[in-house]
Length: 432
View 1 (spheres, rainbow, N blue to C red):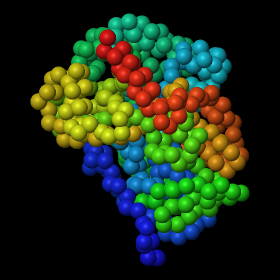
View 2 (spheres, rainbow, N blue to C red; view 1 turned 90 degrees about the vertical axis):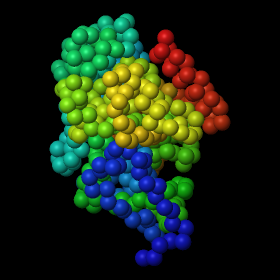
View 3 (cartoon, rainbow, N blue to C red; view 1 turned 135 degrees about the horizontal axis):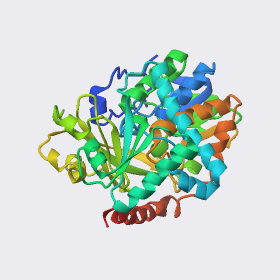
View 4 (cartoon, one colour; view 1 turned 45 degrees about the vertical axis):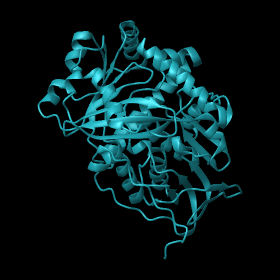
């Protein structure tokens, strides 16, 4: 078929370490013409790809539309960390929802973590998976609550792999003495996030799903069978899943009101050689207790991959290397002489509660977004839960869909200034 005269061009992947080292970054054609499907998925990140895979395995005709490249958004740019549980700790969940509901939410977080590991194993996804994640307290008064939480996770929630680290043990584990203590979670870990997304895409295609790149969804026309209009054709489907997270751009108003896009940034140093073993000898990932979190890990080549700093304006800082390097040197001043080979930014989405926004908005229309920094596990799992719900099993989907969600105040015009004020306050609190 000939190219449509209004065909879009996919933006290339961010200039990241992940894009430079991706395994099998094949191109996929844009939609050309009109299609029918059982399910149309808008968004080629973890949620959309996982839903496409699980739906195709269940025998559904699936068409996925991605405006740019598969894994182009946060799924291909993030820090690659896989955490246990939910974004909120169990004390907070119990205070909000009670013990039984908190346990159900934590167990779903654990099922999300297990889903990622299972997909990697079942589909032989080469994404440099490594076990282990360390959480570091940047204030002395945070250590005791962190340890108390670890004890509760073992005793009441069955997470046997979490252990406490005092200041000396933590310094030995992460190669810096700027933190006061922490915990190690042997059941969590890290991976190369773009390779994981590309592996999900290949598995979905093998199962029978059709994936289109360079195909932005312009609008969703309602009806008994909704129609998704793109510059190069349409898809009419029984069910539509909106899986755009921080890249909604006004496509679906209800989701847009509940999630807020924010920018985050990552760098990768040159390979550090023998120095890498002195930094993180166990090769765990690390994140700290700041509200505006610092997170890092060593990749398979011994590069330091460090994330830090958020901005709330529409554009990225002009000099990303300098911007993120300033955060890294607060943790690792000994890396002042290390060359920065890559630096990139991306957009994630947060909710007011920091719990995901997953809904059946009306018959035939699902949405999932707002993973608030825990998207490797929760976004992948959301795709699976929505596939289960479409197939008629709503038990696990309903637990997350019932979570209360507040709209960001101020509507589309005023909510962004409100977020800037709030996040600036939390960033100041981190420093005090």
